[in-house]
Image (tube, rainbow, N blue to C red; front, side, top):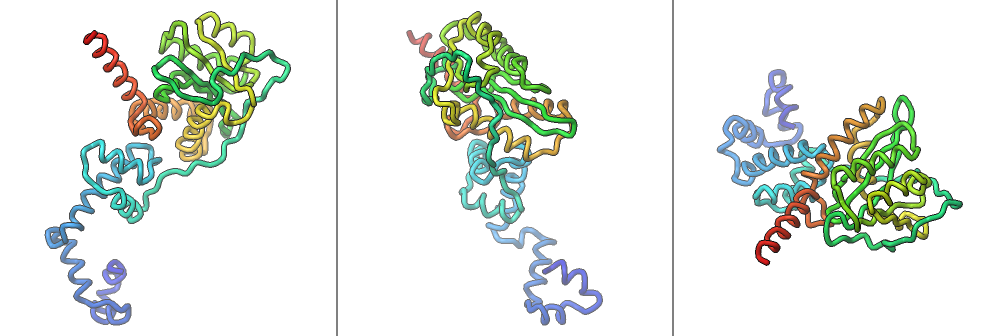
Length: 299
């Protein structure tokens, strides 16, 4: 309203415009005075202005995917004292909002003729330490040059992504390359359970032989629905929501690959995950390792 008065005041004058709107001229003059001298604003208005800048910074630095709850939690981690309802109010006034997850399309094709390992997880996606339980899955992304596929391997303990791969086909090489990255980055030794769905890629001879070679025990969902690999599908759902749907359309594989690289680094080291206590996955793992080191020293 003030901008309308500013635009037409030279032609009609402030008082006649205010009379037609209607608005008291004193309200307009006070508004302009506060613009010129922020010290005239109330304490709440001045604090809102400071918080608005911090909220915008957090939202922008997290790929503009955080809603009010995540922004509020990040501000609390930064020792900024603010109520969640205040963050919600200011985000509405700034026109900021988080992304909303949509439905996930299933890509894995089960091979009913293939011999399957037992289901060692039974939908209980919990781990007491890193390298106890891994889950794996992949998804597709439409680009202007055709479909590309993105595979992930996730350590269940902290929901950390430990392997990923982008490829033009969904053959065994896609999931095997993601597994190789996970094996290289973790050097797990024996005792890891690797869980997947019934996809033919995960039941292939090359994949199962590689698991056996590294002492990783395979596990495959027994019912073949989304709950059998729910944790992996949850992470992929976040990836599709926060990257693919939020930042598309995509021109080619290289664009998807670079965006995935950015997102995985952010997800592992900075994204707040509610199921693990609203901390990033890498932070939870470091806390676990510190605790183990302190326990060993005490013993």
